[in-house]
Length: 183
Image (cartoon, one colour):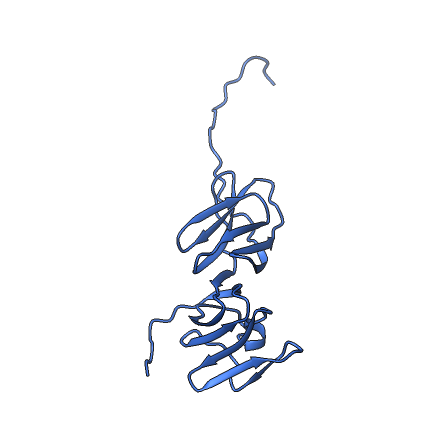
């Protein structure tokens, strides 16, 4: 082996962080006055920066696993985690929030859970009746719904009775319906 200085070629490179952060899950939403409180679980990634809450009319940011948002009439939200390199996670489940008025409210549901049973969708203590075209249901004192309306559908409109005018929130998947049959 020879002694001395040896020259070697120098290589340069760079690293790109394109790994998406983990997605917020176990979304829960509830009304509190005119606000909807949205909370979620999130296993923090080492390079976590913030959560991005995207609504129909605005985008909000927080480092917490919950947020209170004022709802004037109706809004929909989903949540992404964002890392320090601005990589977005997949979007969370969708959340809809109807700011109900006392009495009957004419609404539709564009966000529904996979189980769209009326007992599952209308779990709010404030909602006591729902009326659709030729179908209706009411809640019993034990919290179970009875009537001819069994499932809430995305392509229907409903009269929903609110006893106190609270927020009705639904967590599920955004449904897109472009065809309506008007009677």
